[in-house]
Image: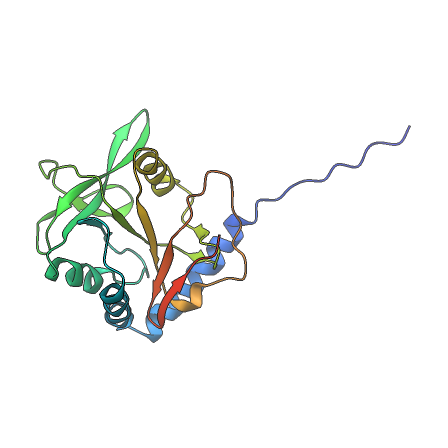
Length: 201
């Protein structure tokens, strides 16, 4: 009797994450002012498309992530409220929530070398999330680090009301197609140093 052929399904994400980390590091080294350029494009975009809601959640950049603080400063200057993610220990892992933040606030060292607001900072539900990423495509699929914290937090928020999610990235992080799974939360668009990219689910 012949043995049946078995096809081993290999997850493409780990290798792609490694490749995209190297690519992003090269992009960051080549353009240290990308965050300021990105903020300029976003400001022009929102001048024509007003925000629906006052609370914007940014992030603290690590590794070679594009700096979102010029963009966050633009939002704060327009009178909008800022927040940052905070990881809370739960059941041997972490749960992502969002806490109120102002540019210049003192921050704490959180898990994974991420700076996050103090424990006494008020928790808030953002209306718009700015998400770091390793890769994206025009369908709004985002490749993150694999922890799933943003996807779970965004799914929870979206189960209760409309919440926008925008990637913040170098234009060179765009792929023709990004591997996806059923739990991946789609992006509404991506801010880059060369312009704003809309998504077509």
